[in-house]
Length: 201
Length: 201
DNA sequence: CGATTTGGACAGCCATATTGACACATTTTT
DNA sequence: AAAAATGTGTCAATATGGCTGTCCAAATCG
Image 1 (cartoon, protein in one colour):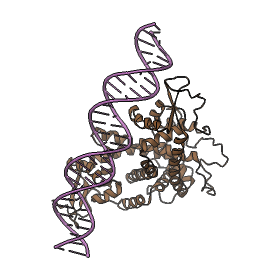
Image 2 (cartoon, rainbow over the protein chains, first blue to last red):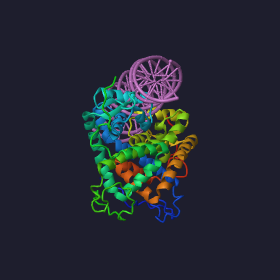
Image 3 (spheres, rainbow over the protein chains, first blue to last red):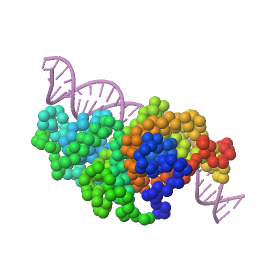
Image 4 (tube, chains in turn yellow, blue, brown, orange):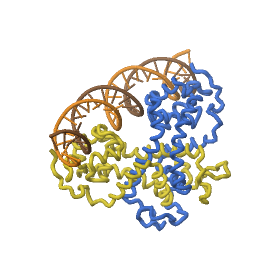
């Protein structure tokens, strides 16, 4: 494994204006995004996102599932008791599209539904133990991968990464992320908050 | 491979508590990746990548194209004179999958082919003026978006973002990125290096 | 009560990816 | 020169994950 990219960004940029690792002087940081910098950003996002998902994708493929299933497992695990409508809002897909991954997940007992306590039309979604186990396996795959990247980059870089990624999100996504983070103090396991798991139908 | 165990971490965390919790005392940054931190990373990557591509996707949809077409335009524009084989390596897809986006792009004169100068079996790909124009329109969309995120986050964060994204890439992708960056000093326009544009067939 | 909301079911379409098999020109090897 | 390998193109079949549209049931709201 030769030639690890240097942390110190060796690119001997021809510009004296030092655009790459921009001077922290924070004075002219309004115009430091030149063409090549954006092209680099495009490359980084393409390769980085692809390889980030690769590990989990492989595991999913063995189970006959795809990334869409993972997303459902992830967000249902993140917010046990989430309604179908909320999940649709987060994923940004249509009800029909969701149905095609959610229905099998319910049928194969990865996800369970229960009627809403206030509004009995709602189906509150949560992971079954089986679903939790799978989600955790997927999680661990990505954990290894991200841990390595974070460790190599260091905490300051991680903070910068988070700031930029947040900035790449649109207003709707930011709001959704906030809600997810609120709930981060989630109960020890995936039971909906205080819902009395009423049977459906 | 230096392994980068601790990564000197220049400033002992000038960050506002943003780094979630974890004592960032720069000593124990090996273990600062707790569960919620990774879940956050997953969310950020999902939302961020989705919204990053949203603008270009919309424009592409109007032209009856998809993200796959954009990727071809991007990487061909990045490395004029690239061979089909190299492009396949970068995209990580099969020849058949590439063919179904590349062939239309050639037919509609966004991309042009010419025979390799050393190996006449090769088809060297480059953007036509029409292709360059479209690529630029797509580029500008994303440029606006990324510029905003970069500006909001500041140069230090951008540097961190780059480090982490690089870290998320696997060895193969890192090598490919290096090659792309080498060529970054590319000629003013998309003519293959010194190829004498031999006709095909 | 009727209207709206929430969720689900079914049909079909499209884009992107896959694999396998085969064809063809060209280059390299024997 | 013949054989093998390489680079590319193409056909057919299949899967996944989106989309739209329509219709329906249950529950809530006014």
